[in-house]
Image (cartoon, rainbow, N blue to C red; front, side, top):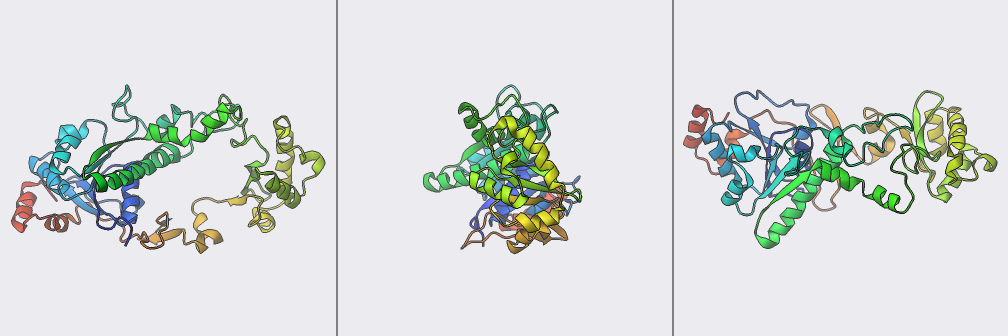
Length: 377
């Protein structure tokens, strides 16, 4: 059983970071109950990785009986995840004040892009927008070219889902001491800003030019920290920052001291980049793996996420699992005594409605009345 065994999480159905957060909590052993829409939600997409380990209750939140059903569930929950824009839960009658009145120990976790207040709080947005105003997007891309979106890893996932889980775990720890719940304002823009912490420090120390792309140590300017094309059109990555690792790079790649001796002279980086690019094109990805993989060069082949699960290191670590025919990342981090696990794949919307309500004290007659009224499905 995972470390969160015994905790109950209610997750209002959403997309992106909120269901990711619920997935991680479910992996860790919490009973995560996804609140889906009744009636017009025929079934979850069974290939949606974020639904793994969760149960589903379908409620009609436009029906007062559906709202009351949810509030009774809140009385039995430890965490409530709100993925909506600020004020939506309040309009539905399930805002934090109402929920905390029903359950004073509840952790009410709110996941938004812009946060619960401020001039953009009510504006629509997506990952690319949240990372734009934190400087993260500006920093990514090649010199003289437009910024390149890093998928939706920085805003939605790292700055959103991970931040949400971090807040929930901290609030649960505090609640165990105080006996009181609280509201968490988890905003993707805040999370993306947090992820930029190191670069603020670098800039303050004169080690980074925030006005430029591909001009700094870690943004692809340095010849010893970038990806390179191989003879077969595949790519490898090099991260030989420290001098001892750079020395190994020169040794294994056959780089001359004359051409590559002045590692940290940024003025010579473009020249060295051009030369090392041609060096790596002389062998295939597999050949470079044979030469460098497992050494302290700081080397890895660049794999797509379909091929990644087959890499020997990932296989040895059991880093990927298959659930309902879908290959996906295994739960992380790893616990020595209370290991995380995926207990089941995705559930169809409402598949667990009757079972969950019965476990939470609803009588058979109450469940039948709610079904007949269309408050649940």
